[in-house]
Image 1 (cartoon, rainbow, N blue to C red):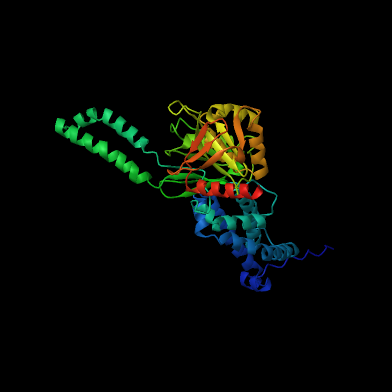
Image 2: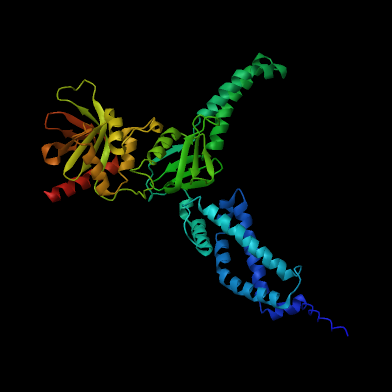
Length: 430
């Protein structure tokens, strides 16, 4: 007698009935899939920041669906296991797509966040929160009045002059083949001479970069604003194969690279970024000083040497004391502060370096001044009571030293206000 045949599994209910039975779980899966696919498509794009800023709430919508999605997946997968529906069932396909989408999206969110900040130990939901904040962050714009700018540079129009020169040098042969006579060649050459620089100026008038205490911001000729956090910037070098004054920067050790080209002051920017990689300044959350500090270029003239060459340097004023550092001692100063003179600091000036040191906390900045004066012969220090100093009628600041030598500098309006604060606190301490 043959054994009875095993009962065949009941066919799955129709999609309409199943949607009712799952009480909205299917719809949650579809909604999550749509939002995640849209976010992944935007983040996969070359213009991913543009897509993110255009719809900054998309990461929030994905994040808010994470909890209901987890419950819906649990319910749907339990039903799929319990009733042994075929792998071709729409719900099976949808759950597989969601799992694969989650893996790709989490990886892409981490990669894109690395553009702004170092990788951290945060969950997928936390990453979405950070991404939403970055999408809404006003810092994706150029620096405003409240954010100090350490260095800036606009479009370098010399490239237009170079293109014009090369075009003029090679224009004779094509013009002759076009059948132009001497007058035509002269007129067309004049048009090239005027037109190319004008065209370059029009196309590049919006290009500029800004270096602030915390980020490097640059705007392209199309008006697009990009930024890199300095704490996670790991690479900066010239790129002569593309442009003589081009600069390549990279976010993180393996992050995306960006090319700044055709801008003024890029060589100085490269030096400052290299300076920021030295131990004293590396990976520091630096900010504009809140303590009393005045600092500006000055000249030192010995007594009775009005018509002789003066020594240039930087005058630093702190409550109760003045310090003068000479430009000629720059590399000795670098050696004292950083322990060595790196090869990639060619072009560094004392003023550039002091502008970076002034971003250190008060105690560390004062310790740097103590290292440089007076034992190292890198600079000179005086007590405020030892010297006679003040603003002159022509808005210069003059310091008469004990030996009769004179320091003279021209502080701007910001430094004049800083000098007043330094002097006020110095008097309060005496």
